[in-house]
Image 1 (tube, rainbow, N blue to C red):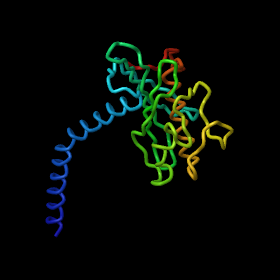
Image 2 (tube, rainbow, N blue to C red):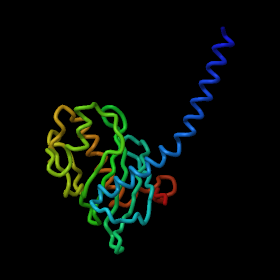
Image 3 (cartoon, rainbow, N blue to C red):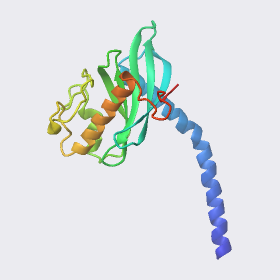
Image 4 (cartoon, one colour):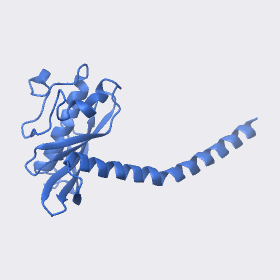
Amino acid sequence: MVLVLTGVAVVMGGILAYVNHLTEGPIAQQKEKALADGIKAVMVCDDLVVTQTDTVLRNDAKGKELTYIIYNVKNAQGNDLGAAVESTTGGFGGNLKVLVGFNPEGTILGYTLLEHAETPGLGAKADKWFQKGGKGDIIGKSPSEPLTVSKDGGQVDAITASTITSRAFLMAVNNAYNAYKVTPAADAESGASKQVK
């Protein structure tokens, strides 16, 4: 009985490893396409080129190191359109990864959720709630003064029954802005900025 179970486990493990190997390429291609489509959506432009990708490392208020990826974008004529910035923060159900588009002055052009584990029907509404025309519309605003929910004295309406998700989302947007527009924080050990290109 033990030999049979061990044999079945080994065969199934091999099959799973093989299937995983077969699907790695298509999954990676799908993620790349989703990112490219996301950049076009948040920059509100179909004819663009990512000219440079920067990775910025920063510590949050709790000392946790966060990674921001900045995609600097130009149009076909070579004019600077700004940047799309990937930002991740902790939401109610887990990590909330947002891609936010900023023009060169730092005004929000658009956003899209890349990943989230928020409650369906509540926190998951963040994909539409903060869009242009939505109840918590942030499009056209600049986070030079951090965006906060009205419950905290801010100017953005939180998602009904999802204040934690709304706070996390706005924190991700504010952090994305800071990674894009504010000089990277200095490394305490060397004094050098912690920006990786």
